[in-house]
Image (tube, rainbow, N blue to C red):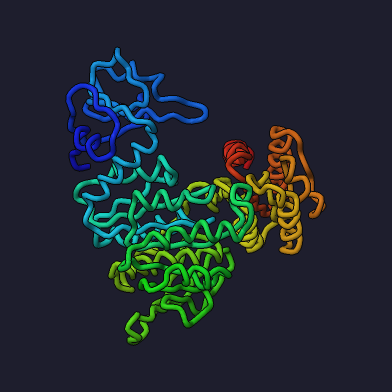
Length: 464
């Protein structure tokens, strides 16, 4: 990170600077990981207050950003009304120092997969700074920008939102040159009120583009008309799984029979030149991965990467932790870990992957969170979809997952340990009979479904 100065920040954004101003190059909001010379920002949240840890800074931090002056702390302090806003202001200054293109992306699902794919493609020819993991909120986006290496020449920033206006705020900091809405689905619908409201909120990323900014638009989404009206006169690229009128699209999508797909990538230049074509073999499962790959291809093409580099990057992508990550634990037992998060559409996509298995298939389902009044209906739809897809068994845990279980005719459990032991017994039985078994684990973060992933990996290995 390039050096900045508290005196300059206070002059630009207001507040009170106590003690002499100080230069700094790194920022932290965690006193436990503070390093010598760091600027500490005392974030205040519903369940935490960074001011409680100011005494931990002695002899390490070069300065602190606070909303309450600490007279016992003998380091420069920038006293502001809102330390979270100040964090964003510091990140905004860092963004203004960065001269390369910044790609920002949002969506209800697939954000991290697309972000990682873009970074993989671009890193073959550029020094890329990308969001680490899914640090995509009003803390994560500023911290991502503040961690940017001074030698980076492209930034790829993931943005998440659970309410209207959050994408607009993050874009006011990141100031994207290229923007993508991957999709709008039912995730966080409780906070938005409706699917249409989610689509509108995600589109804030297009409204924040400058006149020369490039919008990347998924024309397979039902909101495309509204999104393009927001894009207006700005340049844009389109992508599609099935519509050959798009700038980037897929042809001859083929399921290898194991949940992994290959397809022909087609790129139609904006100047209506000759289409470029190349085969792509994905190492990430699911038909939805084709759409995610096209999104990454479009964003990469927008910064001038050629089709050869795009294909090379896409084919280097592999499983991401907790996102349809597959473990072959024995000759008879395969585990699919999709425990990272869940909404209705991502559940259906995961079920499609499970249904590709030629084995006995068990879906282990935890609750989908933040669905509000539509929660019961959407859980029921998961049960119906799993049954229609030919899944053999459904085990559920959680209040609303019981509705999915009832639609499917599966087995509901009120205790995690009991459910885990039932699964272990199934693994043992199939191993004894020499029969193949595939288990998919999925639920929202609040369901903590990694409990079953870890339990099956550890106990399954011992039994098989």
